[in-house]
Image (cartoon, rainbow, N blue to C red):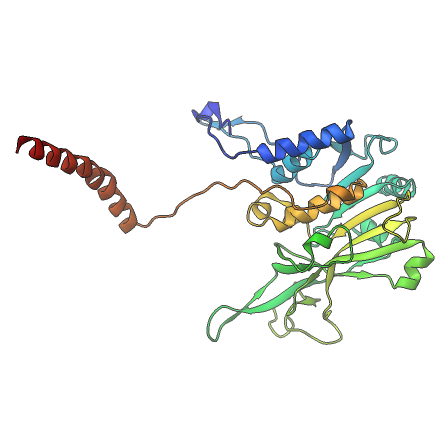
Length: 361
């Protein structure tokens, strides 16, 4: 970590990245040219680049804020993938060198022209990763997902957990369980992972309907037992925020799905196809989530590799570096001062005195 020279910060070693460097070099040797992914911008998605340093009104330098998805960006680049911003307003068509595009947490809906570009890209066997923020209203994007057999439900996954002997609390951070049927999550089968922030459920089209459109839909993650899809999530009425049969959605609650159009039913056969991964949660890829739990990075890694036809690389991602910190109360700090200032100097003094006394005797 180079720190911020404007603030007088010295460089420091933040983590050993040998594993990522070796992995990246091996992939580069095998694949040669880097794969390119387009990161869609223009709808208030999380910025891809760090903010530049700035000056405060008091003429003091302020460090620029890091991108909230800097961990994800670094990991993608270490996988021999070039990630670049893509504004659909600025291009007549999605560039041919972009085989995959990412849509991460858009806060505003897409225009008709942008949706036309997305449909054309999908129709040309494009690959799309869509991470939705359920609190954002994106009806045109939702209509596109309906066309491929996925309905984003207007609810929030909710559970009641015990916080004491007789106390319970309502939570919307979801504990998800990875399902084993897809190559994306096969190695994560049965593993639990937290999905922070709001999460909506997804309803998938029946198998006979999806087969009619030459679509294969495979759920990837479902909420653990105890969750339900709360339809009245904006209400302050406690009675409405309880599970209501017939109005709220009961288990199973899927909130991530893989979609393939035109592929082979036999996973051993490589056939040209359009692929898409949809997750009704976008907060799980932000730095504050990925640095707490590794499972989210493993999941998004598997999704990207599957979209790029790199199933052989789906596995456990390199560990996310964490800064090790200690929290000490006043008593512990006082004891530490005594240890450093008194006891540690006293030990060699005692040894030296004993040696001197022995020689004198």
